[in-house]
Image (cartoon, rainbow, N blue to C red; front, side, top):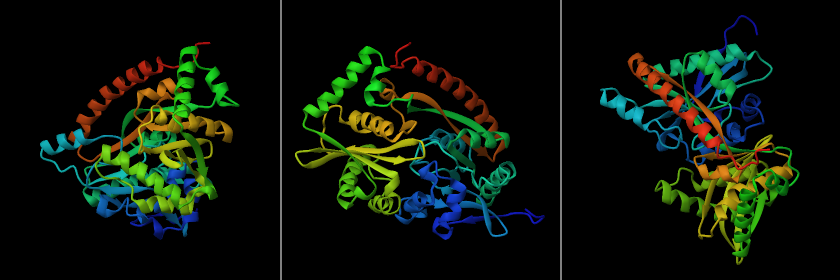
Length: 382
């Protein structure tokens, strides 16, 4: 690049950015930071100013070339994030501060680790990352935001934020790793005898209940599949949140623009769809996202979300299945605990100091929790 400094701007609609240029920064590994996925969230009315997710995407350009971008949102609440800061908000406001608005560097409603500093690989990464992080802090000042939260970071981005002095936070998720398995039976063979028998028993119970499980992807996907999955998604959201984060239109757009990166694992009985799980396919990972059912069948959740996902990953030669947040029950089904990372910028130095001490204790507790969870591994010791 010549001596002219790059330009930082803020874009309030991802539709105003060229998809090819955005994706050149995002790469092909993680489908959730693709232009198509974020555009589906915004265009469907799922992540908008009206829902408390005002897009404020940070864009760094030089000579009309997009060098780097950050998916960022101005938030008026803390819902749909999965790295919980409600306690922070309450403490800040009890002390007389105003916690909202805040900035969220994330993929809305998506607790999937991945890149957040999206930088074209042919350019020197370090100065672009530093410029984007500095831009986030300036954007916080412009909005008088109390904090900026960059959540579910990959290690490279987490290290970049830490080097810039942001506070570090850790969590835990459960991921399955493909240890060169050729079949699902190979995977079962790596488990202890008791765990292997338990999984086979659960799978037999689903089959004995007259349930057929199918995986639908690409050109096979049609509106009837999305209609069914919308019912399942609503049944779960009604129980958990009272109203769904994602709109029906979101799923239509996902099918229209990303069908080749989607796999719906659906359960059918007596000719009717009764449950299903939504997954997205990355370059080497299957990402489990949403699940729901309209009939209560024992072990169906495990079959659709975990076992069929493992089978699909083995067949496709994928290296991991990421089953999302929460759920120690995943460990006994081969999904082991892994560390997740986030970074947090706090404008008020007094609040930052208090949080820094609190986070240090939380990280120690998380280390102990992950170690205790790892001890529950179902795999044979040999």
